[in-house]
Image (cartoon, rainbow, N blue to C red; front, side, top):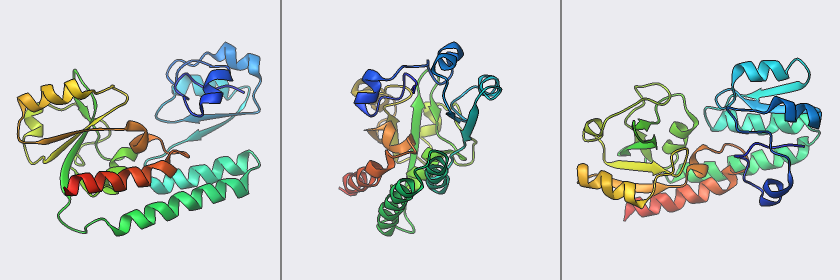
Length: 223
């Protein structure tokens, strides 16, 4: 019935479905006009007060996904809620199979020490208890900020300590090649790569594409 402005896939939906605002600024009046049977929200992305307001009038399912297991469970849960148990199960099983194949190629030791940046001014990285942190492990990477929770603010000086690789995400901050060059000029000697944020942080059906993306990333890092 409706999507947020960040729901860019599939294109046909993005071009034709009513948009009810952004994840942090939901237009509740627009949702009332749509009269949905079900609202799917997310603990991290949506504002608690807005979700609670909507729950007064509608059935609301709040997802909380911090790792691959959570993502697979979420897909099955949503499938059950919308009468698509079989289809959801097939999707979840396919994702699970692809990641199991991927895991076989990951070295048990000698993982690349890496940092995944999501923001600039101030710089913010991915820490523990995040879905991206779990995805990094499937790339054969060891997150240097796992001792810090969620999305810590960091300095360039911290990246010069025990870091071999910096990943600059395409979202939420749209890191570009110019940012990579600027950073390399300040902290030379550390490999810097631009990566597709959707592959690391979209924990729904996009995961079907993530396993191959991570496989290709592993090959690039091995060169």
